[in-house]
Length: 156
Image 1 (cartoon, helix red, strand yellow):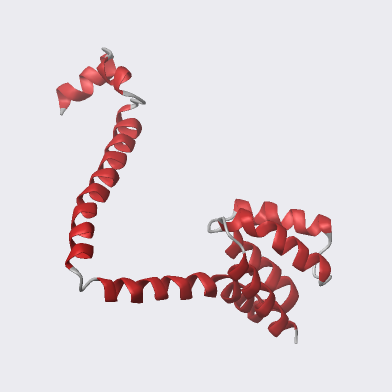
Image 2: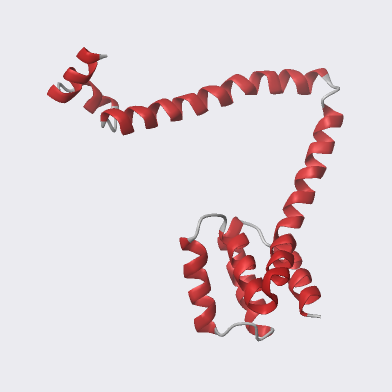
């Protein structure tokens, strides 16, 4: 019974909340407190642990809460429940987009957007690389004479 309850509650949370993991926190809190799965103090600890571990907050919270209530299977079902609505929505959007691809206007729009997206990604990557590798944080510091920078450019 706990497995079905975990799955359905987290399915509802995943389907009805907007704004990512932080938008889900109030629904998760209400669910775990009303079901008696966690105390307020435990819930706050779970938020802290969920934020400090790699991955999305909502997925981590569902995984940890499901684990405390139903072990590995509970963890799996709670995580599946919170992720499934987003997954289904993405599949529906992909199906609609696939049907729209037969129209020339849609193809033309996407052909125009594609280079812009690539340029944005490249601009970000180049900016991060310059900042990380050379220590420049903006264009002004890049133009300022710095002996270490001059040495690096001389070597390159």
